Amino acid sequence: MSVTSNDDKTWPAIGYESVPWDAHPATGMPRQDLAMLGRPYRAAVLPQIAKLGLRFSGQVAAEVEEAAAEARVFDAEVGREIATFAAVLLRTESAASSQIEQLSASARKIAEAEVTGAGTPHAEMIVANVRAMRAALELADHLNADAILAMHDTLMRPSEPEIAGRWRDDQVWIGGRARAFGPGTPHDADFVPPVAARVEPAIDDLMAFIARNDLPALAQAAVAHAQFETIHPFPDGNGRVGRALVQAMLRAKGITRSVSIPVSAGLLTDTGGYFRALTAFREGDPEKIVSTVARATLLGVANGRDLVTDLDAVRADWNERLAGIRSDSGARRLADGLLRYPVVSVKEVRDVLSASPRQNVHRHIETLVDRGILKHHQDYKTRNQTWRAPDVLAALDRYAERAGRRRHARN
Image (tube, rainbow, N blue to C red; front, side, top):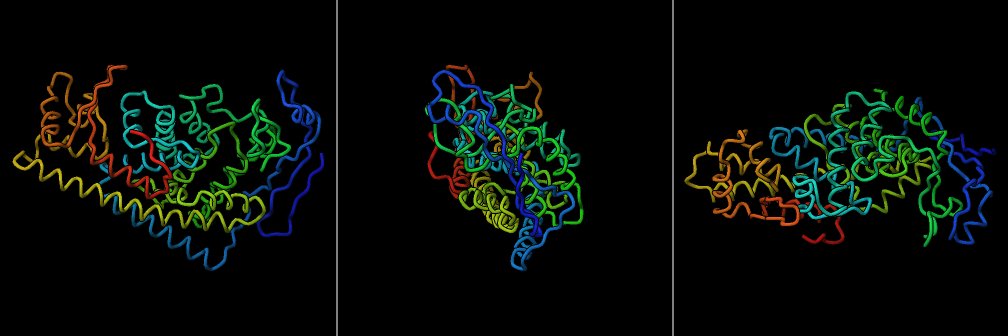
């Protein structure tokens, strides 16, 4: 194997090695793919980053400092009502991260899938991403290779259990010509990550970089994310796990304590710029991904504040609709819970009210239906009976629109 590299920069570009394409011929394989059998392709060889320093221009350093400060302020502001907004922001960040991978669904479809366990394929994958993001935050104090595998397992087990929680054992690549049959070959790919044998050593090096405490936390998270995406350690789910890793690092480094910062919502406003920044990182320029993540953080925080304002307005409107009902009533407590869970079944209602199975919660549901806060839905295929809060769902869809959703998902 021949390896080329570029070591004359503060942050080195990736190198490449020549690897023979040893795939086996298959019935129906296109002629151009058959011609590539046995021919070498170029796979990335990553520099070790565990001990590298980070140098940025004054402008980028200022962006990082401003974004980190805004993230801390937002976390403190929203964290005062963590029971209300932590779940909302986790769900919206997961949906935005999924949207970057072209996985989209309306807020209603996502919430219904979360409650019923069934829904459109995209909604179900977004719900799995919510769980993966939650796992990332829970593992923030123990970030290591096993934590990465646990995030991936949580994300992929519902849809692709055969690859869930396992490092890839084959070559993957990004881009290239579309094929009517088969995945094609890496020869014409936009980027070919390292061969499988290099994945675990690269992950170990990355985790050593993440464990350092001598770097600006937001910049460190951005670089770690870019390195993770360059390793591409899984057959699928790399982007979603990589963005969950950013949230885990922000929690581990003390930038956040209570909620997830809407970084993916900011990235979604310019996915082309985000992908170009990842390419620049591989070419030896970490500034662009650091700047991109810093700006995405500022945009995401602004959008998150708009969402909180919208939800506060919904709550104020509901308070007027519930005039005459005691402040400690089950109906009012259930209304507060709907900001976290905009679609509920009887089970979720009991959880919100801390009610036993013997207690009648339907009277509280009917009160909210009568006041126009809840709408009933009966899924006759699955026999699931749910109620939805249209005002909250509309606020969540407006948030998604602001984050860059380019098309509406059908309700």
